[in-house]
Amino acid sequence: MPLRFKLSDCTGCKLCQLACSAVHDGVFNPEKARLKMTHEYNSDGIKIRSSSCIMCGKCENACLTGGIKSNGRWMVVDNDKCTGCGKCVEVCPTNILYLDADNNTIICDLCGGDPECIKWCPKDVITLWEKEPKK
Image 1 (tube, one colour):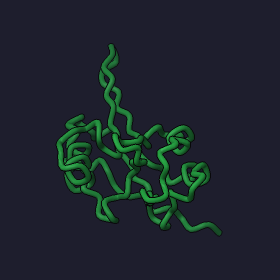
Image 2: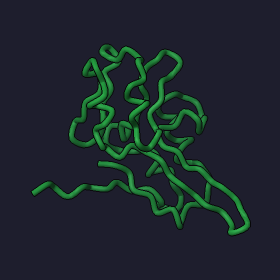
Image 3: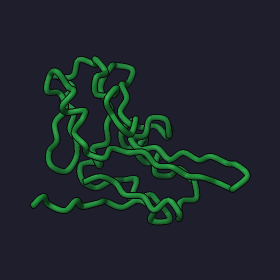
Image 4: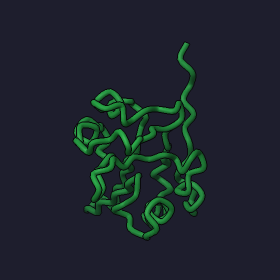
């Protein structure tokens, strides 16, 4: 159940990233967030891009120890199994996975199904995207 972004409404406040880092790491630091909003300014104005886990499963397939699994709604990291090899980081198509200072894999867990990034966004830019079941 990945996040969906309506970037045309994003103001660039980064409250989503601040909420994420506060909930997971106890600090207001956008660099520690499990989603990223990037802003580029040029002669045409502002260009906003989002990056988050898309639940593609490539990290799960790349993990040699079974340390990353999908629970059907988001990816779960078992830090007891994770060796910090970084294979998951290498294959992530959105470049959102990273290893923390302890070599633990960091990935969005949707705050246990109640994402703080969605609650903190003043413009309702972020929603959950329920994928259609495969037929």
